[in-house]
Structure formats: structure tokens, C-alpha cells
Amino acid sequence: MTISSLDPLTDPRWPRLIAENPHSSIFHTREWLNALHLTYGYEPVAFTTRPGSDLSDALVFCKVKSWLTGKRLVSLPFSDHCQPLADAENLQEILYYLHNQRETQQLRYIELRPVLNDLILDVQDQFMPSERFCSQVIDLRPDLETIYKSFHSNCVRRKIKRAEREELVYEAGRSEELLQKFRYLLLLTRRRHQLPPQPPSWFHNILRCLGSLVTIHVVSKDAAPVASILTLTHKGRMVYKYGCSDTKFNAMGGTSLLFWKAIQQAHSAGIEEFDLGRSSYDDPGLIAFKEHLGAGSSELIYYRTPPFRAIKVRPKSSISLLPQKALVHLPDSLFTGVGQLLYRHIG
Image 1 (tube, rainbow, N blue to C red):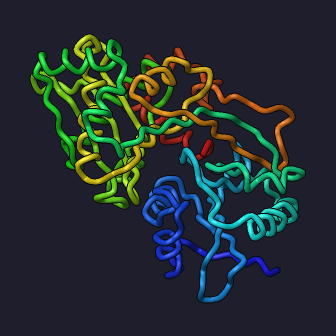
Image 2: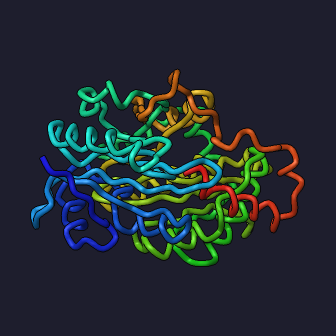
């Protein structure tokens, strides 16, 4: 079987494959791949068993070239998951081909981030489990009253009522004003976690490339932003990608109200699932918060060749070796600059 490569940013067959394949996600789209390319310089590439006009299967990667972390193929950087769009037989052929190409291309490793693990079982002599996460999704098909009752009574519903009494104001959209509120809260949150923020260009490119597929949600108190999340929408699924808040307003219940408003908005638009993304197992508080929103849980497993010597449970950040306490005291411009320099190496 012949394996060929294609550029998903320019190949006219790519959008149709994404539209027709039931396992495609926002992370497969040309819009998301273009945002990655513009921000970090990654080169998207897809491999298929169908070199002709009928593109019916593919496995998409980004080529990451870094003097700091090496050259590698990742499917996909800064994406919670990326299901291979191929059946078991064709996927096996593609993965054997890539495994054999790794040394020729001088790749440090090849990484897969599938949602479904059964397709990988036939090639586990080459691609082995490397990292594990908790993946959580809210089913939005029931009516809103049923969804609301599924929230934890004390941890979520009581906080929503408190936020309503506080008359917190909810806004959603893609304006520059909302982006600035989101960025302000993001800097606060990343300082709190002792981690550099993602570069401003990343969020500008997400808005520029994804357009109506991205929404910034913000709740405010007397015009002061309290909490914000950024969501992505594709084919009946909304994805929670980033969240941030100002802790001095925590008692007001703004974060719970924010998720409830986003759920209401998604439900009215006919969205059937709210993907809350991955959580590290060493962050039980985040997992519990998502469970309190009524989310169901499953395990998300990443695979690599060559494999790690032992399966890792990734820490809260892959940049945890930085002098974190020093980061907190940097001025905003330098704090942001660290992220600008670093993130392209860790995708």
C-alpha cells in the first residue's frame, strides 16, 4: 500500500474530509491548523492511503522543529486530542510507514493523541502509551432543566444563584474588548499558577482564523471582569479550551455562572456536547469541578514512538521546570515575552 503526504492548508480535499468524517473535531480543521502555523511556525502535514482525488482517510500532524526540544511529529500540538481519520487497517499501514520513517527523518519522536484507543492496539509494538489524562464531556441533549439539576447543589447551583444575586453581567462574542478582558484575566491566572501566558499572537490568530467558530465568554461585576472562558464550536460540539478568573471575586460564583450561560447558549444553538477538555490526574480539584457540572469522564491516552520508559501522568504544566517563583514577579511585558519565546518549543 502506498502512503502519500499532503498539505491540509492547501489541499482542496481536506475540508470535505473534515466535513464528512464523523470523528473529525475542531482540531482537524484548516482554521485550527492555520492558527498553529501562523503563531508557532509549525508545518501541518497529513498522511493518507488515498493519493488520488478521493481522500477518505488521513492522519494529520504538525512538524515541530526546535533546537531546544528536538524535531518531531505531533498530532496535534496544543490540542487536547486528534482522532486518526482512518479505519484500523489503513491506520496500521500509515503508522508502520511513519515508524519506519522516524530515523530517516531524524525525528526525536512521533506522538498520537487519539480519542478512541482501539485503533492503536494493532501497532502497540511501535506506538506505546506515554501519557494519561482525564477527559470530561457534558451531554447537552437533555432539556435545560435536566442539565441544571445535574449540577452539584452546593458547588455549582448555589454559586449560580449567588452570582445572579450579585447581578454579574454575562457577555459573549469575539470583540477586541472581550479579548482584552480575557487576556487581563489570563495574566492573573498564569501568575497564580506560576506559569508564563500563551503569546498574545496565539489568541489573535485563533480569532482571525476560526472566526465564528470561537467565542469568548466573560462575566463582570460593575464592569470589572470576574471570569472568562474561550470555547470552540464544530459539528455539534462545543470545546472548552481556556479559562481564567480573578480570585478576589471567587465568592461571587462567577465561574459557575459563566459555564451555565455558555451551556444555555450552546443548547439554544443545538449543540449536543460540551467537551470540557483534558485534566491532569494530579489536579483532582479541576476534575471534581467538571464532575460537579455533570460531566461524564473517560481516559485520554497519548501514544509515542519511541515510547517513554514508563507511562507519565503529565504535571499541570509541561514547563514546570522553569524558575516559577521568579516568573510571578516579572512585569507584564517580560512575563508575556517568556511565553512568546517558550511555547513554540513545547507543543
